[in-house]
Image (tube, rainbow, N blue to C red):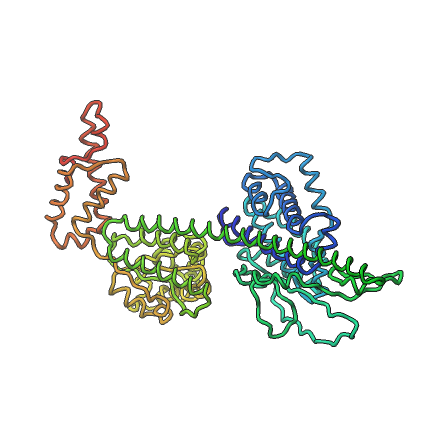
Length: 597
């Protein structure tokens, strides 16, 4: 199974995105006429059949792999457009339900069969992308029930063995490679091997034979979702501009003509888009009536296909809008938390500017505008205790909401966590710590200690070299923040040319003022359920003003004020232990007499 860690929310999003790919493949079958015969038999649209089939396969997977979790039931009920099996979070797996599930699961997969037929007639590879998206959905379901990898692998292998027959022109070795990528890849993604598109040659049809028209699949084969302008278009038409789906009413109303095919008994059979005049002989009135009937049927099919497409499109738009609002609300919450920190005015401004830059960059991407490469790695300079780690943790969460990182976690380390004492061991340690940070931010405190030119054969250089390579390998899902004193960090970046090009964003964290340190202590007290009397605050400020300059060098900013606060809490405890039955107010108040060291 994939090695990347996903939250349940991410798995639901990935599952829905892949389901929408399946639904769009179904629309290709509908508008190209491949679903017409199946619809007459099943009396359902292709997406209705898709809902039931996917839901049945998901439930079969959940049941075969052990106890069915509520999250899996929710996944099976919400990922499809509708809920044909009536699955709910508390659904009991009854024999009757399993009978319905098994009935659908064991039936021939009509949608996959039609995808294969479409590929055969159009020289396409829709079936490969259909199965890729379907397996991604199954893997998302599996991740909701951790610890079942072996049974999941066995189920997916058995299922793929059953349906892979319909994939055209894929060798056994290619099947094995594809399944290995799906089951053991680093992340859930499209694993179809890119192929060189075939070259089609035009031929001149006979005069009495109308040219058959085909439709290309509307899905993007790189796994990207559709823009609002993209829609089905006629295949093999050279140098024809694409048209918006909304402007294709006339296209959807046109007759599709197919050649009559000889059946075994010598009669002629016509395709789903055939013309009545080519199939019937007799009076013109009779031909007109039949032709009108076929036109009405085609118009109905086109209208249904368009309605289904718009339904999927609306679902995509609604989901994207809801996700965007949720991300914006979470970003604002994190920014408010950042702004709630004491001091750090310049830091807050720099982080907000960075957020604004990323938002505008994404808008440019959506509008297909050119953009420069951007590095998200940063250098935090300043003394210890100035809030660098706290801000880095917030930046990790903000980057996740902005889509820069997939997880948004923060992994802290320093020289001891990266450098080993033996040759060859340092690279291993760096690899291990970077693996923990993928999807988030790796925060390296006192990073300048990795580069020490005065020591020969220092393994810190090996750590830096390895780090630079891994930064490039994971540049799309890893951000590194290095921190330390300003001058030392400048020397550190000069020690390796790869560092200079990757760290071009500097944020300076100034020392806190004495008044800000008192405010920080007040925040600490509030978080601990305590209150500091005004007289006590004044005494704390007076205590710090009495410190000599050399004492401030080792005070440690917020770290120093935390040590003082903990000392005052101990002083309060020593005072209250002498009081019989202290009140709630006494237990939650730091008084002036508690402020001493």
